[in-house]
Amino acid sequence: MTATRAKTLVQVGAMLHKAGVLEHLGIKLGDDLKADRHLQKPTAILAGLTFELERILATASKEDLARWERIGTNVVGRHPAE
Image 1 (cartoon, rainbow, N blue to C red):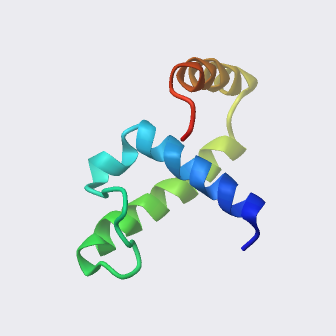
Image 2: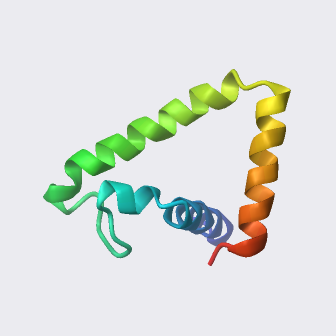
C-alpha cells in the first residue's frame, strides 16, 4: 500500500470515528476488525452501511449533495481529521 493511499484511508477512518459511527457499533480505535471474532457482526454492519452509502450517493440530488457539503464543511472546520 502506498503512503498516500494509507493516508487517505486513515482520514476516512477518522471521519467515521468523529461522526460516532464506530462508537455506535462498539468498535474501538485499535481493534482488529479481521482478527477479533467478537467484531464480526459490527464489521459486517459497517461494510453494509458503506455499500448502502454508495447507493445513496449514486441517486442523490444536487440539493442533497449541497446540504451534505455544508454539514461536512462545518464539521471539518471544527474537527479536522487526525
